[in-house]
Image 1: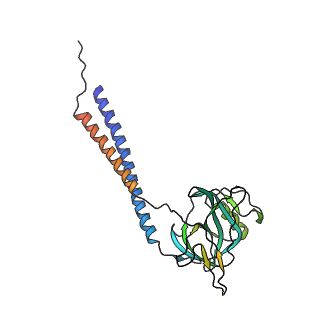
Image 2: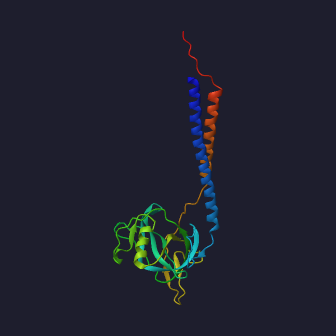
Length: 259
């Protein structure tokens, strides 16, 4: 009777652990399939589209867009603790208006090196005249930390992360406008145009630097590691079942012999 209880307990425990490993394997398979779909979606978004005047829904992340941007002064945010090649700096977010669609959005204009004295903020140009800019829309994942903003002298603001909920709400209430929830990451212009520079249509060929270091390293989906994890969990689940069968049906309990 005691041996039967031990066998039943062993079977239940092994089945539970094996089932848990199988569930983890299926979860990793779902993650791998999701990453594969993200890869296909990212590859399909190489074409840049113009923003619509009345967006019925939020565009998908990594969608390529092109805007005719003009700055909304003095609203700029410097994202602190951004490193490039081991050097600490800032990413510059500027509130801009797309002339064609009349949409307002945050434009990440690139990376700027920090000054030796951390209290000195980097200088940058304002987008005073319409500039044609291309980039990708991305939904930020973390929240801003910002000091209380009261007057125009508080700008540019310094933040430590890239989600624009708090500051966007502040600006929307102040200016009575709607700001897109996604941030547009500007991309460098084609090689036929001088990098980090755009030209206006004026007779004097007015030249203005509006983009900085925009060599983004987007975290592209990689399903391979999830397929690997799925294989490991599946193999472990199968191994537990094999050991359970071997232990129960192919081994005999030890017999103690008294002298």
